[in-house]
Length: 381
Image 1: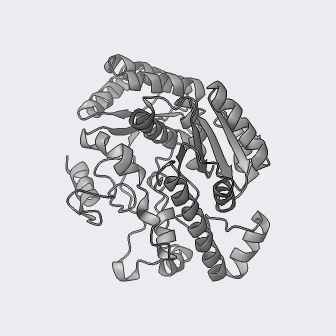
Image 2: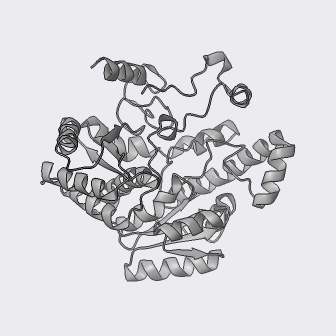
């Protein structure tokens, strides 16, 4: 299957023109894996987020987030993975989310442990968990553009700060400070330009709070949602003073050819995924990180849609896994074929100057040839 999404001639590559064409049914937002029909729910981002926090723990805290306070925001389809990824690394996560239904969904799936309705309540839980060294995740009902500055005002500085609100879309994703969800819906519908202006003003406050936390000792990084880019466009000239997660923690893995490998059981039977789990562990018995992930995923990850799995494999390992899956199908060990898909968070997969290709050593951040060459090679091989 070949799919292309969201490609516009550069002169017409702006939000107004994109939304006009989208309304006509001529394009759609790429949505990375979703746009490529290989979205597997929150598990996909749990894995990448797990790897990011694991690397951050190795870099800054000796390999574990135990007793550390991690602040983030956004518990939607992508950001909802963060609480579980933090607790898998033994940390304490406070995740700010404006929509209580998103928190409730994460509670139901076991990705988040607790929900708090006030900042004071949430902070009391954070302090207790950090003091006892117990992993804990708390979803706080609130707006990050209000909560982050409030923490700065109180001089409460987390150990690590990031964000996964839908800041990439100032109209349909991000909720401006001072608005309820209903008020946001009304403003979006009746005055979209004012809505966008208010969103971007809130993003500036959001980023300014993160910058101040960094000055006061927090480890701060962007999580690829273009929050920094939006704030920069809205006038915050220091928005890029904290790094993106890819150059900070993920690119060293890319440089070794290691990245995400995902597959889906067309049978719809979870047992088929469990059999592939066993096959992966048999293929790569000496990879302790992989072993830990597979074991934790089987315990904590709930399938969304067709049963699926993702793990990070190195150069030369993905083809071995694919051939093994072929054997499982041919021998009837699994009930139906296995679909193998690519992930956007991978070497050669995306040209994105604020994410995958940020801070390239040769200055090629904005060169968009690489994913095209990658696609050509995949179809030609």
